[in-house]
Length: 198
Image (cartoon, rainbow, N blue to C red):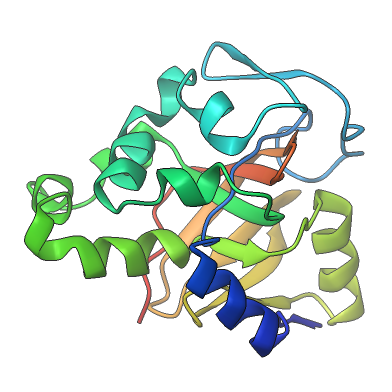
């Protein structure tokens, strides 16, 4: 099954700056039942309140300071405060630390803003895609589901050892470590690797 956002809606969202969303989960790997959208869960040592926006929650997660810095450098703070909804596959600080030395420092430079924006939006799918939606799509797709990101790239979701694995267009793999962190303007699924666009 392929999740492809409506192109007109997507372009309108891009024009409006609605590019990114964030959230987390009560299951460790998308393998179990997802939390109700009104549940408060912990991410990075902080409570993620479902009535707050992605930005209002993400800034409190000790595990996502690099992501927040990148979102700020890319000029996406206002976007993440917008109505959405969007689904964000949110890499942790440790995920960013696994990139080659100097990569993050280079990407947050003003001259590299377009590249950084492309990378960040390659982690975002338009709409509120829950863990159960992803699992149903994997099942309907015979073991794999293609997720079209806001950047126009594709993440392929599969199950490995009970965990949802996202494979980017370069063959890089990210495991969902926490799913269904619902916020007022979307949902975050925490990942252990940075997915890179082609």
